[in-house]
Image 1 (tube, helix red, strand yellow):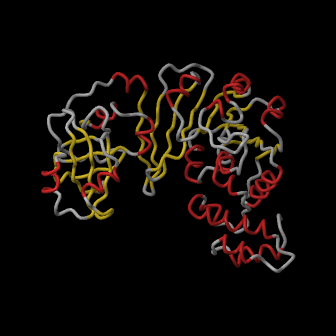
Image 2 (cartoon, rainbow, N blue to C red; image 1 turned 90 degrees about the vertical axis):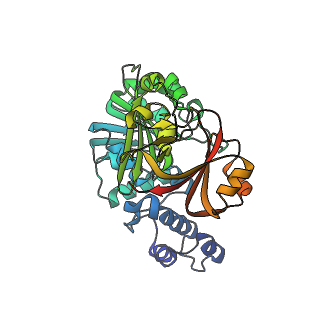
Image 3 (cartoon, rainbow, N blue to C red; image 1 turned 45 degrees about the vertical axis):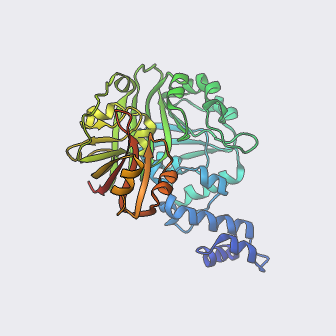
Length: 395
């Protein structure tokens, strides 16, 4: 029980309202903890899409907006928990506990570490609310508790990506705790694996150089938007780690995997002509850097070494991305493009390896945003600039 009856009633009465308007109106009832109520209303509204299993339970308590922003979504937490299981796991960077609760279904014992007392109280309450009883809570920092913890099968860390001034950081050495500094001790306390959740902006190749113990990398997207990059470390150095590009969709998962060597050793063959279909890889594939190996896995041709658009004569049902039927390809010449695109008044415009931005191209063509037509400004193997007119198909 984290609040009183009056505050709970206030939350229930105003949970669907704009939290800013509720804050401006305030509350005349002195028994209502308005700060807590506003935090719960805002947290619950964010949980509707991000944490639907939490949202379904009216007794869940929510932390500050920053903690809600930094926590994993339910769908990515479930994916992480699917990657391993064992007797014991230590979550050394705590937070709101979304990942921890998912891991609790796969491990017999969990040690959870978080120095913020109010956040720890919230997570304890939620664990009890959800009937999760195999978590030991430690309200302190990883640095102070690590030497007193037993060796675990697995360790999980989601380092804070904000510095002491509250500014966002990305590089591994700038996060807290500093994984590079603590890596030897962490490996000593992990019987099998360490999982690191890092920013989707991270330079994967750079981190692989910094962490040669990396066994695999998982680039995780949700409905086409890259959300996180996971590094799984083991005690042995893996010279050629497997890279997984995963897109978690409403109707299933698109999964493509490759190795660094496979990508490096794949030779691109110039295409003779643009085929019937255009293939656009999803965000996970692009972030993972599978620019060349994908051509061999799916028998598609690359429009240009730097364009990251692909073509072929047949539909590839399991292609990890979007597929379009090409209507026409128009050379990017002022007179010709105006003539051939005169009937297009509305379209979705994207550019790949093109001298103009999508907005600049839109203004040049005087085309409104939206509709069922897709225009791609891009470059072909012979360095000519073209605009591809296409329609999206379902697979």
